[in-house]
Length: 476
Ligand SMILES: Nc1nc2c(ncn2[C@@H]2O[C@H](COP(=O)(O)OP(=O)(O)OP(=O)(O)O)[C@@H](O)[C@H]2O)c(=O)[nH]1
Ligand SMILES: [Mg+2]
Image 1 (tube, rainbow, N blue to C red):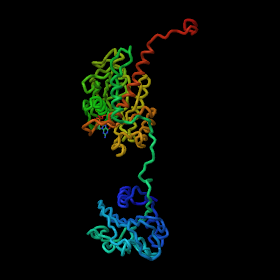
Image 2: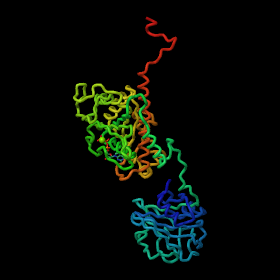
Image 3: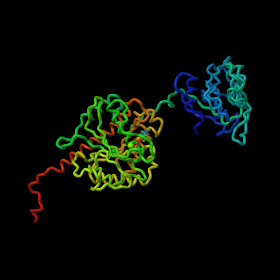
Image 4: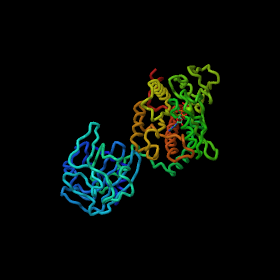
C-alpha cells in the first residue's frame, strides 16, 4: 500500500532532515494496521530513523521526525536530530520546523504509547483507539509545543486546527539513498538526435538546400495537408514557416471554428528569414468534419493537380471536369507529391466513425496513386503537462508513444511514418524543440516526395528489352 505522503511532502522533509537524498518506506498506518500502541511498536521499533505524519479532516499535515530507533523501554532518550514539523494547514502549504529546546528529552519510549516527542509536546495517542463511524480517529494524544520543543510562537491550533481527530496517521522508515529521486535511465521509443540549436540549424540548412530531382522539370515539392477540422493543419504551416523565418509567423489563418476555418485550397511558399523561397509548397485544405466540403471526389481532383490555388470548396458540391477554372491538363508540378494526415493527438480516441472512414478512403486513393503518406500528430502538449514542459523529451514520453501507436493502428500506417509535433499557438518567439519536431516531419515528407518524383520519372523512361526476353510480338 502506498502511503499518503506526497512527493512534495517527501521533498520538504528531506530538506528538513538534511544530509542528502532520502527514501521513505511506509511501516505503519492506523487505517491499515489499526490504531494501537502495541501495533505501532510491532511495526516501528528498531527500524532506524522514522517520520510520523498525521493528516486531519481539515486538510492539515503535521508530525515528528525521530533520528533513532523507536523502542519500548519506558524512558526518555536523547535525540538532537529530532524535530516536530508542519507541512500543510487547512489545505494550504504552511511549512514550519520545531526543534528540541532540550534534546535529552526529545523522545519517550513507552510500550503503551505511540511516537512521543518531548514532555509530551507531541504525542498522537496511547493504548488503543477505535475508528469512528465516518472513518476518522479521535486520538487521545496532544499537541502542546513549548516545553521540550520550541514553538516558534506558532499556536498549536494553527497546526492541528485545535483537534486531535485525524483521517490517518502513518509512520515511514527514512533511509539515506536516492532511490526516490534518481530516475531510471530511460530508453527512448524512437532514436533521434538531441533536439537542440545545432540540430535545428543543420535541419534548416539541409531542407533549404533540397530540390526536386533533376529532370523532373519541377521547381517545388507540393506537400498537401488534410485532416479533421481544428486538428492544426494551418497552424503546422505557420510553425514550419516560423522555423525558417526564425520568428513566429501567422500566414495561414488559425482558429477554433467548429465548422472549420480554412475553406480554400491554398498553397504557401516557404521563405527563409532573408525572404528567399525554398523549393517547398505547403498546401492547406478545409477540415474534414461531419458535413465536409472536401469529399473524396474533390480530393481526387486535388491530388491530380486539377485544382488551382485558392480554389474555393462549396459544401456538398462535387468538382467535375466541367467545373469553372479547373486546370484541364495538369503537369507533374501541379500534382501533389506527398500527403500528410494532420491529426490532433489529444482527441484520437474521440475521432468520429465518419472521419475515420474518410481518412481510410483518402488513404486508399492516395496509395493507389502511389503518393507517399505520413501522419503529423499535433497538440501533443495536451497529452501530459510533462510533455508541454519538456518538449525536447517527447521521444521518452510513454503518452506520446501511445498516441503514435494509436494513430498507426487506427489508420494502418507504420509508426515510423507518424510524427509528433506541437504547433506554435501561444508562443511569441520560436522555440528550438517546436521547430525541430516540425522540421523532422517536413523532412520525411520531402524525402518521400523526392522518391515519388523519381519513381514517376523512372516509370516514364523507356526500359530496354532484355536480349532473351519474350515480347508479345514473339508469341503472336
Ligand atoms: N495546444 C495546442 N493547440 C494547437 C496546436 N495546433 C493547433 N492548435 C490550436 O488548435 C486550433 C485549430 O488550429 P488550426 O490550425 O486552425 O486547425 P486547422 O486544422 O487548420 O482547422 P480548420 O482549418 O478549421 O480545418 C487553434 O486554436 C490552434 O491554436 C498544438 O500543437 N497545440
Ligand atoms: Mg485551417
